[in-house]
Image (cartoon, rainbow, N blue to C red; front, side, top):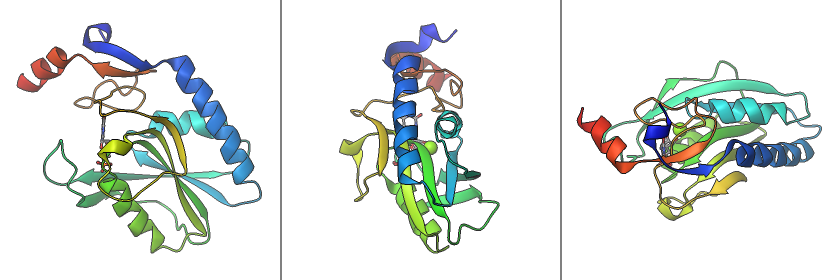
Length: 184
Ligand code: XMP
Ligand code: MG
């Protein structure tokens, strides 16, 4: 089923597991003695946050936020709507946002601005993937799994038309598959 949609696997399960372990170790060091709250950006961040949290050897809490960009679906407008807000206050907490991918950076910039007003003790970003060349705002994540070129990528939380989030690796879909699905 999935094989027919794949052009190229960009990061295998093993690549991801190794990177997640490395990030988890670094975060464990950096947040020792702090009041860590992981904030998963739904839906794309769920697989990454689930695996990453298991590699952080600290007491921590988790919360979830869902956002959506208004307007054009392929180009982020920077106007963001919170579809599901956090359940708890982040005041005084050491907040680490867990994202699937940063593209233009507009979504995250909005999110950072919004969460900053809630007075966390600290606010940082951990993203699995980054497309730095696509950035339109000044934003650098403190933790990043892989920097990539401007490919549309799918799997490990990232979707194409809400599909393939469960695929345990990150791949570039076949252009003809994308075209076929979008026209049907
Ligand atoms: P911005 O441009 O605001 O957008 O940084 C970030 C959001 O855009 C989505 N996005 C992708 N989703 N494959 C995807 O499945 C991609 O290659 C891709 N690039 C950006 C994603 O939802 C991310 O949170
Ligand atoms: Mg996302």
